[in-house]
Length: 247
Ligand code: ADP
Image 1: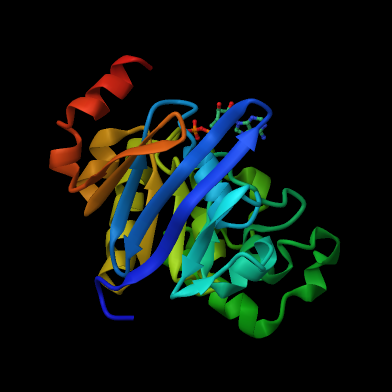
Image 2 (image 1 turned 180 degrees about the horizontal axis):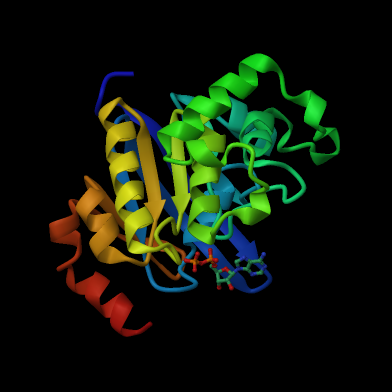
């Protein structure tokens, strides 16, 4: 896909929990090769939007479109294989597995019962080792997942999603709770993946971190998109400042 072409679109999505509209006719457009910062006060719908994109939630209205094709009929597993890669606020690793197994066994991520050591093929192990080296964790391949720090676990999750060669990478608060050294490494990894054409959407509270990376920013408040555009313009938009003051 040529850089700048719409890679991912969320069209008019509404999600309701009881009386709360977590998302209210929200739309975003993510150009191929871009880094989009998704910001907004607590409870504004950011994580819900990720959950709609990756198929965790089925919206009451609206659609998610990747490469011009609706993802509506695909479940979470289908979307992971269709090109939606995602991390979580709290990294979801299998604590009974080694670091290498966690990455290599990504095909089984959605079916944990199949996760046994022998499920990892030689080719998968080689690819997983390469990705762990890429994220700077080459020396931890045989460590237990539980031996890693919180920040290292986040990098393992990044290596894990790269196994499936995603078109779009959704990062949910990647900077939260990680030390300055890993934070710098993370920024470098995002930049280098982006330089080779990977597209990112990043939910992040650390504005300095995310706005330094982003080409465009979308701001949610009360489930609605209240601003979208280049980070400098959006961060001085009166509606955005007001949304944060009310937080
Ligand atoms: P953010 O990620 O921006 O902090 P969320 O997407 O987590 O916001 O939440 C948006 C709104 O939806 C909040 O009011 C939240 O309480 C509500 N919400 C999110 N998930 C659920 C759920 N599973 N059940 C009920 N309410 C939810």
